[in-house]
Length: 250
Image (cartoon, rainbow, N blue to C red; front, side):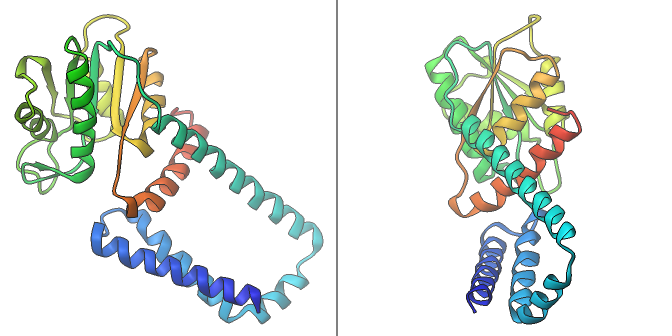
């Protein structure tokens, strides 16, 4: 009975989270459907637990052992990934960088989305404290965007008091790899000091990509996200980190 209650509880919470996320953040993030599938699976498993338990008892012990080990390794890998994600996202960079590189995110018309605005606010704080640092604003123009993400970021920072002379626009990239690669081409010097600004859950992977591209003196600066997006973004990012590690991309 305890297992069934737990299954119904987890399933109900997953479905509720899916509904909340869909209403407030939309369904543009395909990983969001994970919560719908998880909720349905938990509820179906709980509803048919007696039959599932009989089937499980019939599975040979070696198969159960292998399955248990694989599940345990998956949990450990996800847990390790989360430790790195959280750790890197909460670190404060050293002052005096040559460049602040702000990674692009969605723009609604000409207005930065919540996540992009938080990145810009974090970059703004660093730029105000370090007047010798230049800003590279990286992001092309996507669907539903009247201007490039780079241009929208420049307008936002200029309104906050950052002069155009301190800003370098990179408006051709469409993903994180290109954000960093195309921006690197606009930097002076062989090994500049760079503070890479993105949302906190994304810092670890972004810094890893930058180091793979030869930016050895790079630090991250994480910006906050809406509280209700945290479970979805951090779990999705853990899977992404594992994938990038296995593929040698970070």
